[in-house]
Length: 114
Length: 114
Image (tube, rainbow over all chains, first blue to last red; front, side):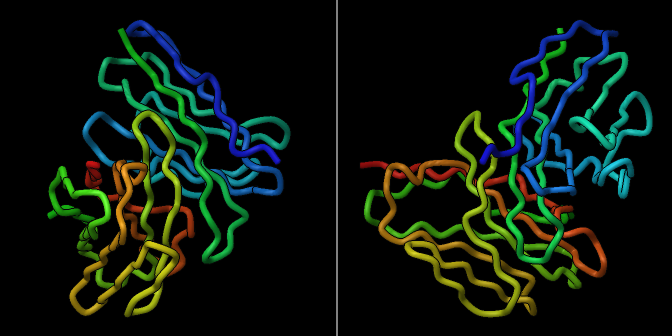
């Protein structure tokens, strides 16, 4: 029973490049969340997706960031034209969507922008 | 004012002692409260959740909730060196908000020394 799978584990990009972070939720989970953890800060909600739908993107920066969760395949968090301030740990989490259910986090992707 | 605020650390306790972690939240309508443990470089792991005023015990862990005071705490009895980690308080505002959309505090670093 695989947990929430994220890849890559570490991603290095130069300023101006694109970063693509992938997340496969736990089997049976159709609710996916992306969180960002900046150095010395807590986790911040970014976006909530269900299959083929963005439900809540209130935590996403208005520019350069996008997310999708297609019918087939993993959820993707895409950051265009990365800047040094995007360097952070990006965590994906999933659950089935019921109150009291445990929110399972993936191991995270550490993005470093040079 | 931060939405979820945790007592500033780091907190250092001797092995076998009780560790007390505190958290306050600003949204009076918040309905569910969580404590996560995060080891350095790892993903957050849920250790307790609580919805009702009072105490909830699970092994060596006790969560306490006081909605009138907007206060949540976590007690760890018989602290072990393996409990050394960052503890994150998280709040779900409820009111139709997705159960996985949490507001996290900045975390308290706990060190249990032998």
